[in-house]
Image: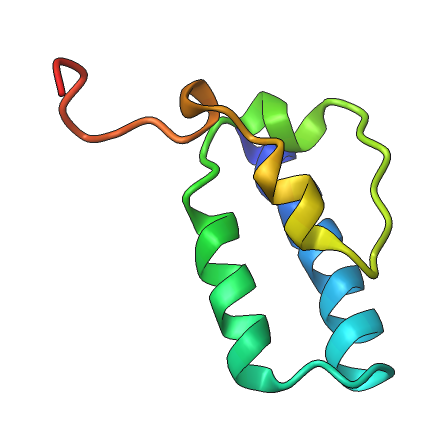
Length: 76
């Protein structure tokens, strides 16, 4: 799980630098993407290799499935 947390941090830090610091994405847009990323809690999703382009985390996050975004109540 710690490795997944580290991978998530690296992916999001790279995306933030590319989009906000070096790009033209507004901080409010970034916050929305970051909030969506927080819903992807399965460590394996962050560890598994993805074709990650730092300029488009929205597409990557859209590929996450319901199993990558578990809810508190498993019977929900």
